[in-house]
Length: 185
Image 1: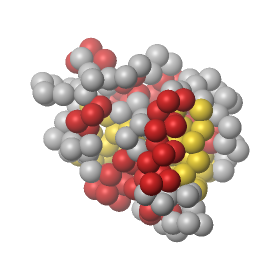
Image 2: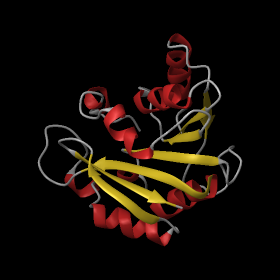
Image 3: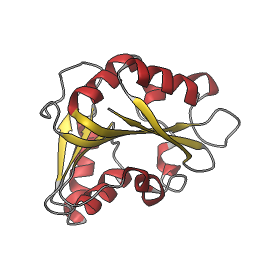
Image 4: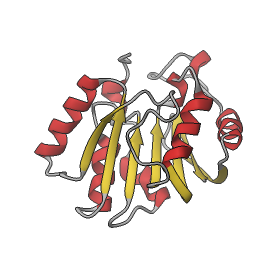
């Protein structure tokens, strides 16, 4: 479901300031789970992992993936592979299990109806010792973003991630209206 605030989101989150917490390097395999059509995190990750690396852009909206594929071509990111999937169905994502070095969930969890399954699917895709980056909206008044009742506290995300087998390794401010959490599988 398209959210009205997404068009302004790129000015709120800096991919370089957020992705530095994952220490992505050449040749790594990464998935941007719930990538959205803007592709700011997908394309930045693609540049960080370089031509020997691979970034899966995963979303449930085929139109979003088509838009992102076009942007990737225009920006010369031939290492972006769009994947259509419902991330709330464990085993549905066409990425080999245990093959990822890192995964991103940027402004995704607040939209999920089944966070437990979504986090299990992320865990299925990640290899042991890899990292999951979660960025989501802080509670409190903001000119953009989802309604307060849809937002998750960092404590809620930590509890959900730990129940899915992740361990918290870092917590950081991801901007004026967002928080960031890095988990290790």
